[in-house]
Amino acid sequence: MEVKFIIDTQLPPGLSQLITNKGCDAVHTTFFPNGHLMNDHEIRKIAVDQNRIIITKDTHFREYFILKGSPPKVILLTIGNSSNNELFEIIDRCLPMCLSNIEHGNFFIIGRENFVAIM
Image 1 (tube, rainbow, N blue to C red):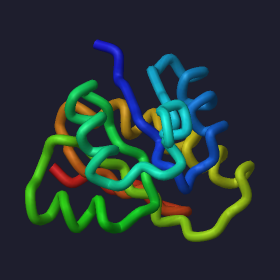
Image 2 (spheres, helix red, strand yellow):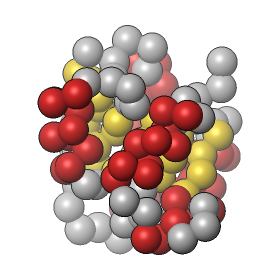
Image 3 (cartoon, helix red, strand yellow):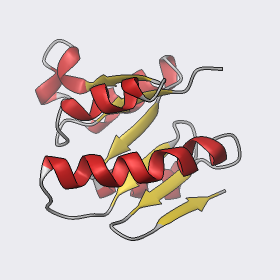
Image 4 (spheres, rainbow, N blue to C red):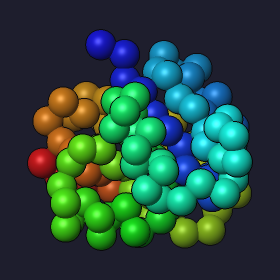
């Protein structure tokens, strides 16, 4: 089964290409009409309808997950401000761990130095 992601607006569109190069299906919100203006509800709807995992820095998705659970699955990046290169290096390092745990977890946190899966 191919793992599919939707990349939230505040993250660089190039992140979707990095993840696609790793063999996954990844789309950035800017791919959609008015994507740069999408709200969280619209992103969640796409994630559920298309069976995509949301990659975001937006803590509202964590709060929604705590209240409502999954779906959709969420990967929350807690790395703060970083260059695109630093972000790409962190994702490149952590994506294999995410993919190996994706069937068993619904919420993941990726920080600068750590990776946490919440089942």
